[in-house]
Amino acid sequence: MPITNFGGLLNFAEEIEKQDMAFYNSVADNQDMSDLCDLFQGFAKDCKKNIVHILRTRRENVTEMILEPIRDFFRKPFVLEAQNDKEMDRAQILDYSKKLETRAIDYYTEGAVKIKALPEVAQALKLARKKRIAHTTKLSGIQYKTGRKKEKFL
Amino acid sequence: MTLPIMKNYINGEWVESNGTTMGDVTNPATGKKIAQVVYGTKDDVEQAVKAAQEAFVQWRETPPLTRARYIFRIKEVFEENFEEIAQTLTMENGKVIDEARAEVRRMIENVEHATAATTLMCGYTLEDIAKGIDSYGHRQPMGVFAGIVPYNFPAMVPWWFLPYALVTGNTYVLKPSEQVPMTQTKIFECLDEVGFPEGVVNMVHGSKDVVNAILDHQDIQGVSFVGSTATAEYIYKRCGETGKRVQALGGAKNIVGVMPDANLDAGIPSLVSSFYGVAGQRCLAGSILAPVGDIADELLEKFVTEAKKIKVGDGLSDQTGMGPMAGKIHQDRVLAYIEKGIEEGATLVLDGRSCKVEGCPDGYFVGPTIFDNVTPDMTIAREEIFGPVVSVVRCNTFEDLIKLVNTRNFANAACLYTDSGAAARKFKYEALPSMVGINIGVAAPMSFFPFGGSGNSMFGDIKAHGQEIFQFFTDTKVVMERWF
Image (cartoon, rainbow over the protein chains, first blue to last red):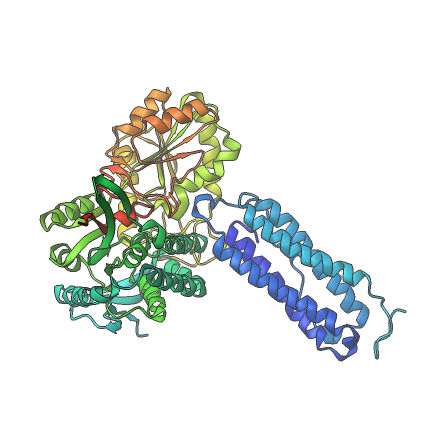
């Protein structure tokens, strides 16, 4: 499905953040991941902040004067099927989290280019991206160590 | 299913009209009825004006900063209800949800601008106008003002006036368009949360009877109107008969000129949205596309290509690029103009008459339409179409373009696409319309600049919003003072 306008671009950003927030909240409650509870709670909190930020941007930066169409931008490359962390082991959860972060970073990177006619919106996307880059760095520093039940990597 | 019935808001209460005529509110994307509105009467107006007149006594004594705090509170509740207002607007008017959001934003920008009353309402003073005599001018509120507003911008246009009237100490009676009463009803629900003193702000739904009752009422000091030129002229004259202040903004026939040196790749998106934004139903929409010289063929080719990409549909979908006409009557009117264009010999390059939208078989859609080889004397080059119809009038020279711009019946807005500063300056200098865009397709002034045309596009002296609006809503009382 193409993303053809300002609202469509920010609506999809909201969808991404909501999907990721739900996953991270669930992981934070997952007993098998209890050692990373604070980390995933923090991720979920950042997603929530991004949602507030995106909605505020949608309200405040929409301007009729330059409501021009967006071309050649599609949802498909950024769609990730929602996963249930309770059916995943530790390694899978961490891998999937990295995928979510990469997806968000890519979306915000490309989105900022597509919406460059509205610099404040591009800036908002860059801010959201910044949080996601920080997540990636944190995830990279986690060792795939032994979980209580699902031992995969050491 | 029982449809909601829109009520009047008078003296801080939601009240039923004593009218007996009921109108339907229709979602133009689906053709389905979504609400009903009772057309108010002279008695309804009488009650609203009485409440406003009584409230004025206390309200004018309320310090401007305190009044401005009410306006700040309006901003808060509008932000909280932003999306709901935008969705309501799209449902009853049809415009694309992003356009509705942009409209609500512009409404709020007027609220923000109005909060500057403590500066913009200030008077002025001069010592020693004669020996030992000082003089100063106060800006005083005048009483009850009224607004009569159109269907194409049901959220924004009332707020070109209303916040300024209130913040300067006047009280207000608003008549929304009977075609789209739900948006202002939602907005007045927000105002109800703000907690204005009873009677400061009032709303009466209705049609011509309500308009005439407002125009003839002796206790209304001034009227703000936006709509067609014919009605603007009528309102101007009738207000003159009863000694009211009046600002009546009428129709338009906006020309967008494109010079041979224009950067088409950069300009095409805004050019296209100038003509097709809000499905051409805005008084700043481009209506005549006027290429100058040999750029015409290249421009037309690019313009048609982009126009064909516009997805017409229900404005509530974020996939939609252009919504329907706001009503059946408007759809019929636009279709009749297309027929007229064909009849008078223009070349139909893109035909939007048979536009069909999946899932919306009863919507009032007209697809992007383009006529080439339109001559200045053709009906479609002279009259306001108010729909997604582009008339291409090819000009040989810049002088031909200026002549075209300055010989329409209207003088609202005009735009020029060029890379030449000299051409831009000449255009700004010589074009008669009051709102000019250079490499901008929609020359819409922000809330802190005045909005309004000249010629047959505006009747009255003071335009909407900007700094001047504080003059419209106040009388400058000049005091000369000497002490012995």
